[in-house]
Picture 1 (cartoon, helix red, strand yellow):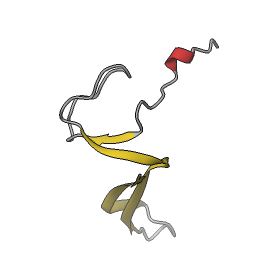
Picture 2: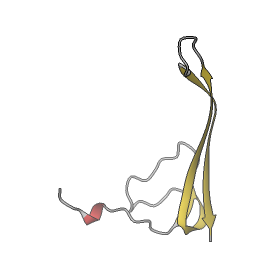
Picture 3: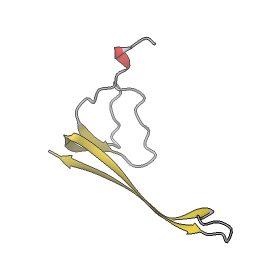
Length: 84
């Protein structure tokens, strides 16, 4: 395998920027973010974390000691970060 240093992505500013769902993303690291992105400031070196919380109910069957199917009752994603 040939190593290509030019393909290593390095964060440019460390600023967390968010945009509404469906906003077109840049195709490379040299393209500037569109005005739909709002900058929220610098984050610490810990970066951001994504936490997933799922609640589900099992559907039991008489022939099995474990549920045969699960129905998801709630699904939550939480993004956390610490700003400087």
